[in-house]
Length: 421
View 1 (cartoon, rainbow, N blue to C red):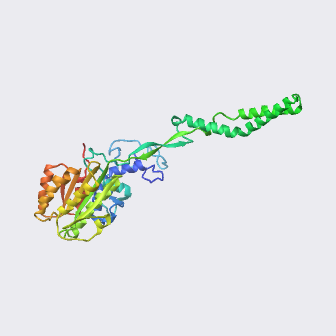
View 2: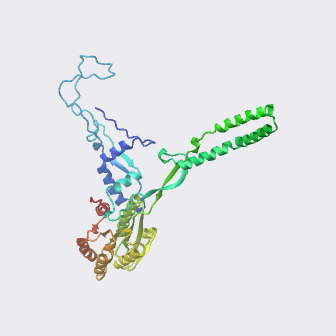
């Protein structure tokens, strides 16, 4: 039995269902390619598409067919050499190439199948089954909220939205406009006829002509329709955006001297993933970028990913700045607040306990979720030990360690995996 799968692209996207089925079948190969892309690409190239290579042995599709042995009568269409009763030798077992097996001098082989994921498909797999956690308290609109609002009248619409008063006003105006000239002529003819009657010329030809003109004008006026399709007016309603719950994500990156180029590269890739995830999945979200060494500073997106400023390490400076920004611009009553922090954990010994206190007392009560990643350290640092106490006490706090580029994507998925309520 042959099975045909149409994988041709179509201008009207008619093959979308087949393509989605194909992508689901090779999900594992695509996931491996996505993971490889995170660790091998440049930060700026993370969001483009990807070529996926599938081994030829994985391309075979299951099919029902007759097994070897038995007696069968088969009639092949288009046969010109054999007639009923002729006998043909059975093919040797394994004689067909079947598209599998190792290459040899006597057998053909198949190349791996390569196809390309579009940017949208690649991004879908990137962030499949991910979400900002704890969205129950204040629902964040992934799509903008709108309400139906009146917007005047239109000449076409649904019968249920027909506006009777407006339509009748329109009909009256049309009738007055179309019958104004005949009415004026009718008034003049009637006045002339009355004048002839007053002068005793009731049977004159002029009087008869005026009577015919009056009848004609009245018929012309009566021919104006009471209401016409052109008169109909419908109430118009449009979608009007309405204020909805919003979210803010704080990105805190350690750029101190202990964060060498490799660690900073890992941190930037992590935050680039986070940036792509948020901008793709949510319509409204504010991103606040904070870089810190001994002092913290709010920067724009470009400076966050490209600035080369460095120095000592005081992690609490970033937390204090984050707390102040929340109090000033993002009241927790109307904002869903999230934070992600990346550091190597190397901090002044006396500052790590202060970071824990800031989190517990000031920041976590205002935030929905705080994620911390510690980058490429052989042993947990002082900051990790302090944060571990916070993680044990609060479900709003999560922490993971990243040892290499290959760990970024699995750690990111673990931190932002969609949780079933």
